[in-house]
Image 1 (cartoon, rainbow, N blue to C red):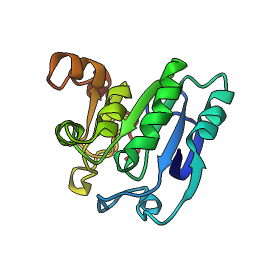
Image 2 (cartoon, one colour):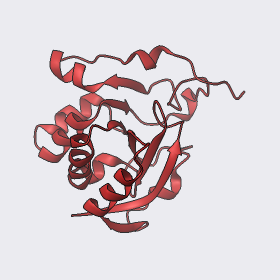
Image 3 (cartoon, rainbow, N blue to C red):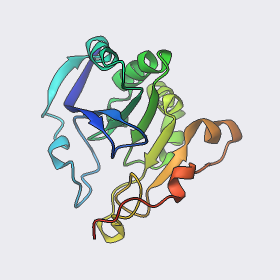
Length: 176
């Protein structure tokens, strides 16, 4: 199975808790004004990679126990990313997924798109919602604008309502 990849960043400390490998998916339907990953928007950009080969590359670094799917929009490539997530989760890795869709929108999509349900269920944390320049806040942890939430996905799916992660309530570094 193939994934359209924009980039892989190793040893990130800003895309979720701990030291992480970040997978930037290519292609995004949201085109949020002010997005800091504009180069990932074009669905024709990036390069194709084999999901199993990418998983092997990630797992080769035995010190990395955390992975983030960002983009672009990861849920625009839900099937290959759900397959990658399944491999990584089977090895005990923690997964953060960023999405311009809200959790509620993803739940609706998951009713008709199995891969969306699979990818959502694989996430430990979801940072949801579009980047809104008018709500930009550099003091937020792992988020760019105050409308975005850090959601504990397993807890939310289990209880049937949104459970915000404790990380949602922590401040980040101030660069102002």
